[in-house]
Image 1 (cartoon, rainbow, N blue to C red):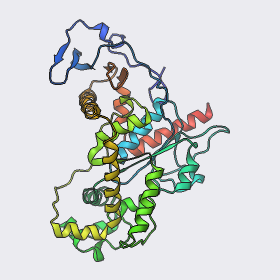
Image 2 (image 1 turned 60 degrees about the vertical axis):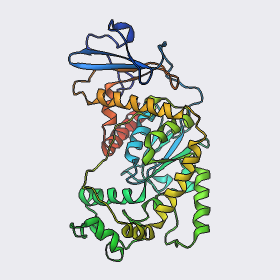
Image 3 (image 1 turned 135 degrees about the horizontal axis):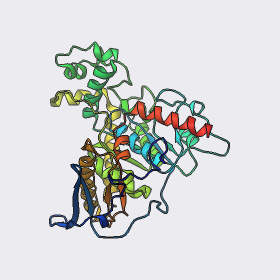
Image 4 (image 1 turned 120 degrees about the vertical axis):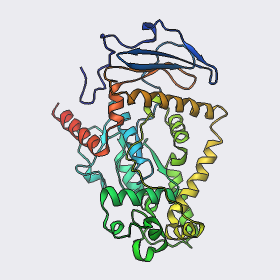
Length: 382
């Protein structure tokens, strides 16, 4: 039987048979461009792909040394909802305790946590908050690690401006004339973007816990706080290098590809906006903290990239192929009860993607949190 989320029940292909490479008689076709082989088969108009670097036996679900105590700083409009979904699914897959606030989606203090039984502790945290060292230390066990993500500030601001105006209805954004909307926001901050911290100004600075009203000329103070953050976060991901960031995180946490697959979420389409050099310079002055944060952690990330080894780029390419297969698999409307099996590669052991994985990758933040709270209630009663 399956639990509330379907992770205990192995998905079966139609005909009550588990999908396995041994069930198929079709030949393997060599992909000469990558040196990989894949097998395709179709049942009831569904195509399943088994992708492999090296033919091998079944892999293990448990990984020695896998880090399971992780706090994720959910930075607004920086791919953080996709990351939250990933961390939630990791927690479910490994039967971990996922920390949630009693209500809503923000956690500002330890007292807002849903209580656990005596002797229990939380393993995963991925809800919105403002970073504070002592707060994060109080949430998870002492061996927990911190992960965050940043995004290029202009792109992040444009995305946030449309998202929070169109979908959330933030009042200050709705007051800005829709004609030349972003240009008005950037060119007239004294009229439309007056708060030091807002959805579109120094947002990453607020999320990372910078003090309010710190001045741009306080370079030493800003640098000292960034150094402190760097010492407290195992990894700050770069959204523009999302897949590279995920593979780097996989290595640092000793996770599997199944733990980092994703489908994009919380994306809001809008018209393309191009700012001129004068506007970019003005926004750099208005939202200086976000540029300081992004530039600092971009340099840190590039330094870490250089330590990843000569095979890192090949692993990222392999991961992209995995994502392509997963996307095709999950895009099939009749995917229920079919599994997608990846054989062992030089970078990972065997793993299986099921229809339940697709379902939860497509689940929005509010619904996911609601289900997690229901699961929490069910565990407490059990």
